[in-house]
Image 1 (tube, rainbow, N blue to C red):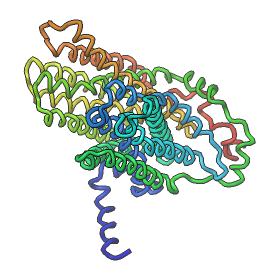
Image 2 (cartoon, one colour):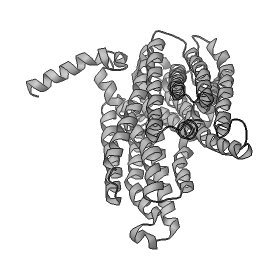
Image 3 (cartoon, rainbow, N blue to C red):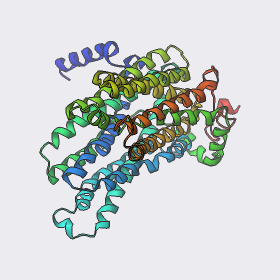
Length: 484
């Protein structure tokens, strides 16, 4: 390495702990360079999410002339695998590899499945659109191929994110986990924002050939990012331990899950995560149409709402990370997020009669801020409550509930808006009636979330949800000291 490169690296490292978000999450055993490298799996996840929900959503409908109903079904297909995140996390907890790894094999499997979906997706979309020679092919071939591609991408994303977060929990010290959570989700947002700009620039002059290049380029980048992320991250167990482990009985998933749910307030914790996630997700498909239809904002102005929402989320994650790292109760932090969400939705509601774009923008920012506080608080609580050898199951349960609730809420928000608008077309609220109904329902869900979390806030210093089976490592993973 030449002297200039050495000086540049030293300067970057010296600035890192002062200016990079959550850089102080690093410890001597887990330095910043290793943390940033591990977080690259979140960048690949963010890239896939933007590709599915954002870029392809528009390309399929506008450029490829695919019916919107089919597009909606395709985009929702990855949610099928969300409930399996708990099973994926559990399998990574008890997995015994001949090479001595637990998490790494699942990360590689998830990466390859994600790569496979991205590799076949562009050709499936071209057949689905019926363009060129694909017009002579049966319609069901394009639909089946596109569905398979979306399913593979969803399975890979859920596997990679669940096991990656579990690996981060294994590596991070308990006192630094809040900041590690913040860093991981900042990198997720970074991946989404950067990918949105890059995909938009590359597809500015759209052509089927360019679409193939962009999506398959994303597949290659996924392989590279995830490969670099997990390289030498997980410590390998000794060969003797790896050979002895399979000879011992490991608990079945049903047995472990039953013990997890039977733990103190485990079900209440998951219900709180589901209610809060639905409350902060139901408006995702409504904010920009609300701004355009009700406040008569231009397309460029409504597009800025996504940036305001993401910026609010970054501020929420930053504040939560700083406060939680000082020992604050994560469920109390999550409740603060729900409390912030109530006036945020009220601001959006009152923006219509006041015709105030400023009030609407402020409400959108606060929605992102409250969602950041809530998401960071619940995920940190899950990481803290997860026993050492069952982090995958706990984080998988959180991810399954969070992803499923978000998907259901987004779909339900659009449906409820249309139903109310059709049933009450001539109310005093006018076209805002359907939107306001959804926003009011989200406020009700936030109050329900606060009520559900109230008993959890009072429980300090306990690992809520850890049943008797989860408070000890799975059979076959005990150390010799624990056995003696």
